[in-house]
Image 1 (cartoon, rainbow, N blue to C red):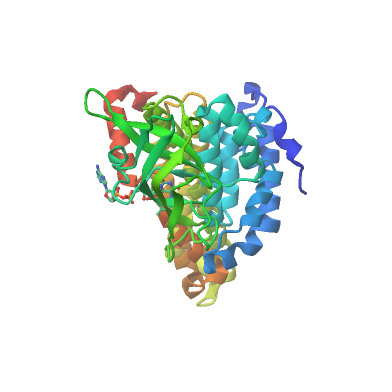
Image 2 (spheres, rainbow, N blue to C red; image 1 turned 90 degrees about the vertical axis):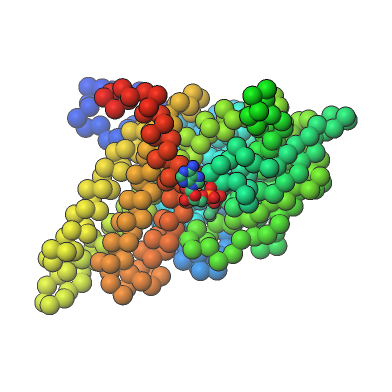
Length: 419
Ligand SMILES: Cc1cc2nc3c(=O)[nH]c(=O)nc-3n(C[C@H](O)[C@H](O)[C@H](O)COP(=O)(O)OP(=O)(O)OC[C@H]3O[C@@H](n4cnc5c(N)ncnc54)[C@H](O)[C@@H]3O)c2cc1C
């Protein structure tokens, strides 16, 4: 049963702690449970039937994407006054988990738009920017992207080479290339995203550190184009990835977010919800892979017995179940504590992504193994989930960067281990 958009507009109520033993961390309120049910129905009816074809042909399903706007999902964390659903980090996790249990490629396009562009704007944009742009990106009229990475700078993001210089006429001139940008092109004709959140270097501070600023650049800005759509990706083929080129790109003062040089803080803050929702995508991949391998192990007979009776198959299923449950608890516990307005949750947003991404990849891998030859072909889905799962260890921060951040944060706050 589909529920209309308005269902998302209920205010989330506080959980009654008298019921702590029946508390479901994945559906902490009735509204969260309704949201999950609504998305699950939508995914089953609309997302699942198109997933294989769009992966196979490396096509982003723009029409289906826009439909997410009708359900209030494109602006899931945006206040209602700007056309959003006004929901919290747990709701964002539910949406990302459910979509990626079917089609992580489509899910990545959703995450890039709703978390990397839309949530960023809702949190950090000016009133004028929010009023002008949020209704369009919440409805699906506009598709958004976020451009941080560059051909020569990924993990080492503060080294970025893209520059923005203030002209004497008050306009900014942006030069540089951005690489690997999800939704950077919305089709094979290299049509740029309608709007992109671009980080650029605007100077250095007195200690020689780079100062980063953010610009909201709309399709049609002179000097903004798609360099290449990137083909032949291992996975996430239902989302478009592109290189963006800014060649003397001119934007007016209204494109600047906040004050010049103030972006590192909000960049780091938005990475928290990005990493948490990438972990949520991994949770969806893990759940689906586990479900497929578990059912298959009952149906498939070898040596006169269901293969689930063999100890080695039991190890695949048993370990996957335990890890999936641990992942689910950590993802939703982090979501519960992540305040979208505050930040300061890097330890666990990195931690949960570090754990969930690799576990999802391993669980998808075991699912292929349990299905044998059938697991290796598209009809049985798990090979696609396995290919898609690998990106999670790279995008939004590599697993090595999470290891580094966690160790650094625990050095600053050793008591975090005992809390
Ligand atoms: C499909 C896809 C979609 C993407 N979408 C976006 C997007 O929408 N927007 C965006 O801005 N970016 C996007 N990215 C880019 C992604 O965030 C980067 O690929 C990622 O941050 C890694 O950067 P890199 O590829 O330059 O690798 P590098 O940073 O060059 O890393 C190469 C290797 O070196 C390791 N390494 C680097 N520094 C250290 C260190 N200090 N210690 C230990 N090991 C280190 C890394 O962990 C990695 O294993 C996307 C990437 C892909 C593949």
